[in-house]
Length: 324
Image (cartoon, rainbow, N blue to C red; front, side, top):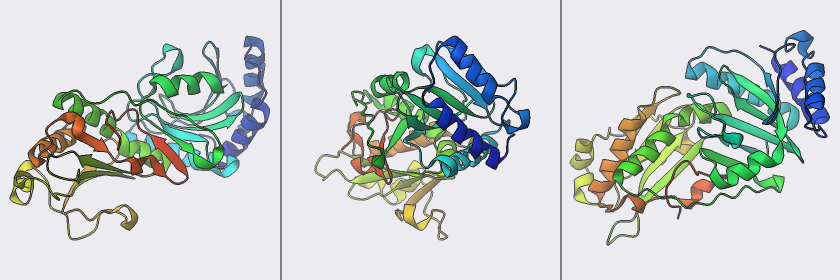
């Protein structure tokens, strides 16, 4: 493991010298050999060079393999790189796929931060064994992500950049809704821990005869919580009905930071990195939405306010829900 100070020095060097990098095999290999001698030789022999796909990969550390340790180490490295370079232009989490037909690692979560330097980008990503600093061309990832990317992505509002993503998908039935919720929730607390950016995602329900009430709030920082408001909905999902559906009552002692706490009467603590039973949490949300009066899976809506969390504007293509 290289130290926090060495991480910052490496980040500045990669940003300064990688800006005009030409992606030829000889140029990439020479650049990697030179940078591999940083940090008193601790990176020597570990730099991976690839021209197709074009990237230079610098493994930074080898934390314990459990999700909590991986997320904590990623956060340490991310904070060191932020201190050296400022806030990233893009951050978020990858889905299972990446440009050039590659799959991504690891299963605990796929967080990333990207510092864009025109034609070249410095990315911090979660590798199979630990965090990696990666130099790569900017265009391939950006073109791919805004058409088929999954997970979620935040764009720093002051960067002047954009990464619009079409939202064509909506859940076709209740099973489809369960799958999209479970896939999204499984790694969410690990990713928000790693990035240091909490998420507060309201879910509304189109219920006949109502004004589309707020039903749930997905709150994730170091842990994932699911709030259920039980407001303006069918009797089957209120009071004793909510308890019968499986909702724990809100504890008297606050579990959530005040700025993230919606003070809903029902609150599920779904766990921290690597602990989330995403299938059970998704089942609870789906059966509650149906009991509350939501008649179609496509009528559970992600609130548009979730897309704005200063200083980032977010899109959530991995959460295949309508936005409104």
